[in-house]
Amino acid sequence: MSIATVILAAGKGTRMNSDIPKVLHPIAGAPMLVHALQAARSQEPERMVVVAGHGAEAVSQAVRDYDEDVQVVVQEEQLGTGHAVQQARAALDGFEGTVIVLYGDTPFVRPETLEAMIAARGAQDVVVLGFEAADPGRYGRLKMNGETLDAIVEFKDATEAERAISLCNSGVVACDAATLFSLLDDVTNDNAAGEFYLTDIIGLARARGLSAGVVTCPEAETLGINSRAELAAADALFQQTARAAAMEDGVTLLDPSSIYFSYDTFIGRDTVIEPHVFFGPEVTVESGARIRAFSHLEGCHVARGGVIGPYARLRPGAELAEDVRVGNFVEIKNATIDAGAKVNHLSYIGDAFVGAAANIGAGTITCNYDGVLKHHTHIGARAFIGSNTMLVAPVSVGNEAMTASGSVITSDVEDGALAIARAHQVEKPGMARKLMQMLRAKKARQTRGN
Image (cartoon, rainbow, N blue to C red; front, side):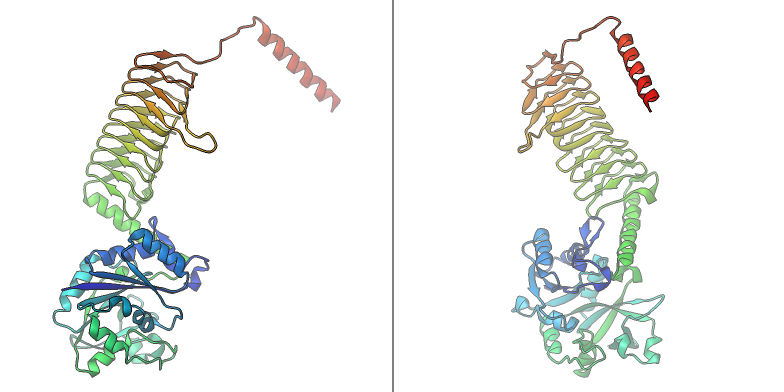
C-alpha cells in the first residue's frame, strides 16, 4: 500500500508565550516537529507534506534541515484542521494510496501505532487513532456503534452525554487520498468555533455508507504540547522512555534519572554511564565505553573501550578511537584522538590530530585560533607532550617526540626530538625575603594612613 503523510504545523501556540513557532520548540535536542517527521518517515512514505502557517519561513527551514525532499505548503489563514489538510491537495496530486494526517505538536506517535492504522485501512475506509483518557477534558469524543466509529464530536459541540465518553480523538487519521479530499470538500464551518474540522469527515463518510474504525494507543503517545509546562512534561516522558530503552539494550545507567539523552543518541551495549551525564545531538558511543560523571557530549563519536571524564566536554567533531582516555576538565573540539591516546587532565585539544598512544600532559592547550582563522595541530604517535605546553598552531609534533613542561611550541618538532621552549630561569638570592618585607611595610603604612 502506498503511503503519504501530511503533518499539520501551522499553529501559533499562543500559550507558549514565545516568538518561536510552537512546533520548533525542542524536545531532547530537536524541534518537536522533527519527532513528528521521524514518525512519518518510519512508514517510508512516497510523499511527505508539512502544512506551515505561523512562522512559515522558520518552519520551512527546519523541514529543509531535516530532509529537503519534504514539501512545505502554507496555510495563510488558520481556519481549522480540515482547511489545513486541504492545503496539501496540490502537493498530493496524482497520489493514489493512503494519506496519514499527523501533527507537529504531537511528537510521540510510535511507528508500531502507524503500522496498525495502515493495517486497519485494509478493512476500513477511514481509520482514526483514539485513546482512553484518564481525564477526557476538552478532547473530541469518539462515538462508537459497536466496532464502528459513527462520528467525532468536538468538546465545544458535544452534549453532556457525549462529554461522558472517555474514548477520545487524537486527531491522527488514515484515509484513501481521493476519499479524503472528496470528504473535505463537503466539510462546513457550521460549528461553535466557525472552523473547518477534519473530524467532520467521519460523519460525512458514514452518511455515504463508508466504513470507519478506530485504532487505540496509550494516552501518553498522543500527548499534545501547547504550553511550556507540557513541553517540559513531554521532554521528561522522552527521557524516561529513552533511559528504559538504553537499559533494555544492555547499557548500564548508574543513576538513570540524572542522565539526559538527545533524540538521536546511540549508546552501545556494555557501556557504563555514570550520574549527571548530558548527551547533546549527534552522539555515538560504541560498546564497552565508560562515560564518567558530569560529562557533556555533543556531535562526537567515542569508540569501543573509551573512558571519558569525569567533568569532560566533547564538542562537535570530536572523534575518539578505541581505548582513548579523556579525563577531568578536558575539552576536545573538531579533533581526532587515535587509539590508546591519553588526554587526562585540564587540557584543550581543538582542530587537531593526536596520534596513537600519545600522552598529553596536564594543562596542554592547542592555540588554534588567531582571531580570524582556525589552524591545525598534529601530534604524532607515541608523542609525549609535557604539562603546561602551549602548541601554537599551525604546528606539528613528530612521532615519539617530546615537549618539555612549560614550553611554548611555535615550530615543528621532528620525530624523536625533545623540544624545550621556555624562558631561562634566573635566581636572585635573598630577594624573596626583601621583597616581602617591602610589601608588608607598604601595607602597614597604608593601614596607619586610614
